[in-house]
Length: 286
Image (cartoon, rainbow, N blue to C red; front, side, top):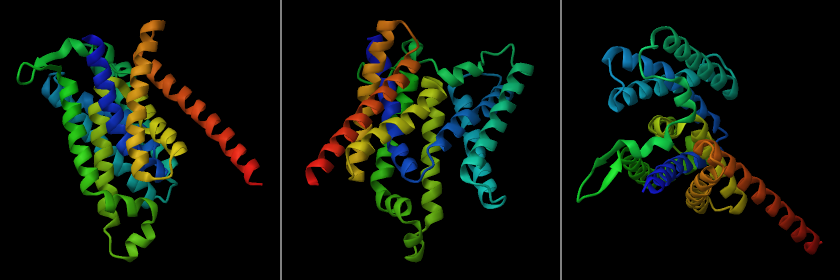
């Protein structure tokens, strides 16, 4: 059952990240997920310092606060300081992450807080936090949270698909036709913040950014239909979670690292395969 809980948790993270990552990739904003997942560290410490507890609820609340702060900082630097988005992202997340490291190293020695956990997660120990749900079903508490977020995100994407789609692919046209571009931007950023914040405790920042960028990029190479791309990205993320997990068991290495590596290898295989196929088609057509 430990295998099942770990794979289920990773798959839920993959689905959540694929849904958000698909829109972020087309907007050329994938690294904002990396920024938010690193920027949660000072919020985690502040939540611990105020509550005196490392329970999930205060920690997630603190992480959410930091995630929102990082998003606002990036927007402010982009619009007010007129920085390029990649520069704004780099400044914001490195500043917040560094502040978090300083706070924890100075005042968090006696707490069960570890900046390395934020990077690599604790997915190998996910089965240690089992709790009864209903009808005799027992799941880790992080998995339950991720499942609830998955349902929420799927519903949000279905409900807001038209607005997200048009503001992603043609924001100028959307603005000229009266579509609330700013609303849909923050609607997406809220989903990204929620995804990264609830995922970091289980899988860590490294795997979050791998799921945000890898499966959508693989799906992008395989289809030009955006709806199919989102669905395919979710499936690719699940398959990479399974393959990466059993690779980690086989090699006795980090699960998060193995899944991230598996995603990268799948991308390379698909990239080479599609490139060769495209060349053959071009040769035949000429």
